[in-house]
Length: 131
Image 1 (tube, rainbow, N blue to C red):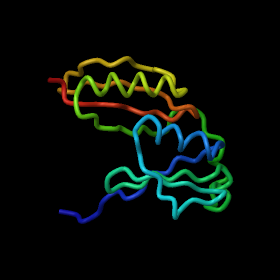
Image 2: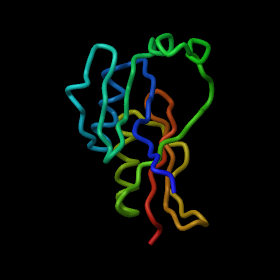
Image 3: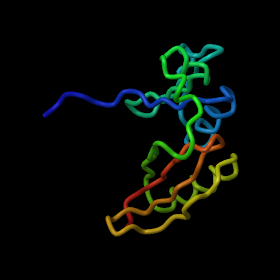
Image 4: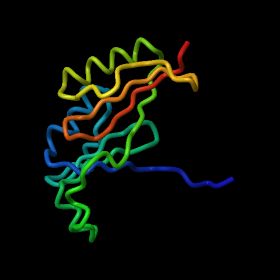
């Protein structure tokens, strides 16, 4: 078994204040204040760090050809404690500027989930066991 783990998820942003604040407000994530700069913010999600570099970080990473992607290229899933929390988080997300893409439904693989696009169009799935 591998000892590898995912430690960071990065979401490039054009609004370094608003996008991280969306995740703080909706999911009650804690900011790692010591990492804050005028070009970067970071939030703690359990053992995972959610990083928000300013859009010009594409150039720093030698990825300028990727700086204007179209369509959804990834999706992050937040695990809720139950079905009612899924509904609560979806409502909170839309109140804070997310767009509801798929209302909550029960899947055939035992989950109750919904999909929203955050204020910059990143796909976010909110899920819990369907009980």
